[in-house]
Length: 110
Length: 114
Image 1: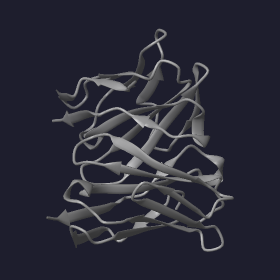
Image 2: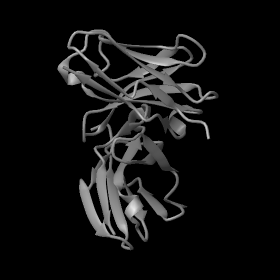
Image 3: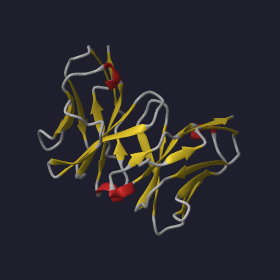
């Protein structure tokens, strides 16, 4: 498919634990982005990683990109109940505008 | 902080009616997008717009859909004859530098077609 596919579809963890979400894609990309969506709200950009980068950090977020495996991961460390949301990866496969996957629904229990 | 605003937040319409969804992108952004999300499902790309013309559209964006930037601030999505399957959340987004940069999304317009 043209867009990234997130895995798992749903993830439930306890507050304080780390959450890891994965994204796989099928063609070469220029950049991959992660977004967050609270229920019923608009998407909020979290982090952008370019194809020549392997890892980026932003606060409690760590994103990795493995272009040989065509995959990315988003790690949220020391999760909080407020991190409960859906997380989407987006890619510019075929040099097209950003396409999103179906997302991972993260639930962080207090 | 600048934001993308969308109106209406919720619209209910009868099948076959025309609907116009409005968006005010961030003022210095040059790239504009519409995405839609059927409840609980993936976010689907509809169309991108740059320099007063469509730059890319998906297979979803058929002849029933059109976009327009009627003035310097608004960006609209028109659905000419709505179908039941058009019921979804429609998100407008804008970007300063296009696909190489982040997208800023509005809060969405929920369209319900009866």
